[in-house]
Image (cartoon, rainbow over all chains, first blue to last red; front, side, top):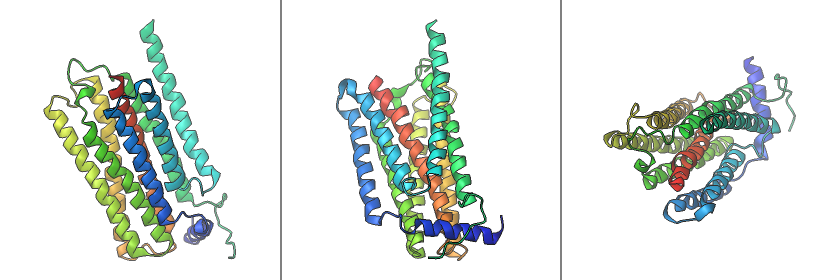
Length: 110
Length: 195
């Protein structure tokens, strides 16, 4: 790819981003929410949430994941193609390794 | 603002697309190690298991890495606004937090080793150290990338308007943080609740 092509692509990317950035204050707000969610996660170590503990941890993990991907990685503001890349890779990994683990679980139960 | 027709076929920066493709493949990479850990979580060979984990200590490490994502995005934001001095400040803050995280990992591994959990002790130990060790290696590479970015900015080789470069390194860093979000929950917290 030529240098001028790279510069042109950078200019388009830069222009596309111009109106789509959260402000620093908004980033700090998002980080504080993430910190609060992390504190809630850690609280499961100190307090007994009963049978809701593990589902709560999984839900918090997913929320934090989506927030970091959406706001910090700019998936919310960028072309949908990048979201498709991210979630396709993630989805493929989840399906593949769930299937792999199930094989071992089924095999162990036989 | 006049639209500039890019020379790429999709109108997207190839380097950014390349980074996203790489990150998508990295899910498979870490997925393999995470699956192995879940498979061998009870295979402790009568040695230490999950009871060896220090959740409060790891929570602090997790918080530090999470906040490094904030400083990374603030660095990119500064670069977009053309404030290169502030961008370098946030880059250094991010790299510093990354090094704090790595220091925490080294300390944790040292303590575990002293308490009888080393790489070859059991399948549980091997899978744990490979998963968290490879994550640590990714953090270390991220720190080197950040310091390289800082250095290039200081020497004027990265200019305002070239914020895609900071963004690409930021994507890698946020990914490393996202993987730790998953590791912290799946490796440390959920097994503790399982008992």
